[in-house]
Image (cartoon, rainbow, N blue to C red; front, side, top):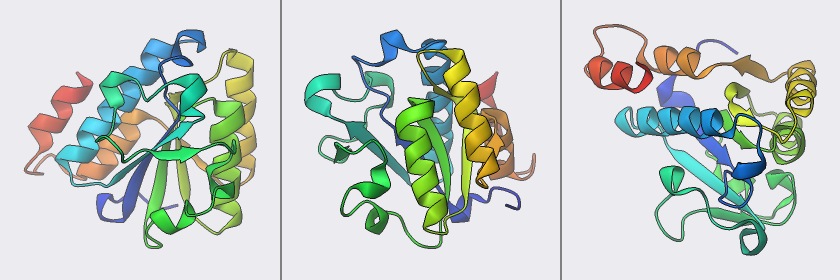
Length: 177
């Protein structure tokens, strides 16, 4: 994947839900980095799609990342690509920048499905989490082996900006400092 271009990106936030996050190792960092990505996406006009796994059981998306009411993509399948209508919600010309939980379950299965459908994917390592660190690390390695780029929040943000002369540079940089 070349540089992550905001004009060709879509931020996908997978299952960062209120009843799940207290069990996630380093969950506060996952939410904080996903929040930075979400704020940068909003400042730079990058579209966002949020999924919720079994919202009746796991609750809604955490308030810090909550989408507009009624806009989260509801799913019961671990891999979102197995849910009818999901791929149709993703513009074909967009690369996916992925954050969320759990790295070794819903994120992994969604990313593998996206790769199988021919999509380019960048997984934001510091914005994905699992209950156990070793599951997160194994998932990142497996996703990389299947062609996903493994990146960090700052990589994405600075690639979206492209230059210190960008009109939103100061606003976006404040998100990371």
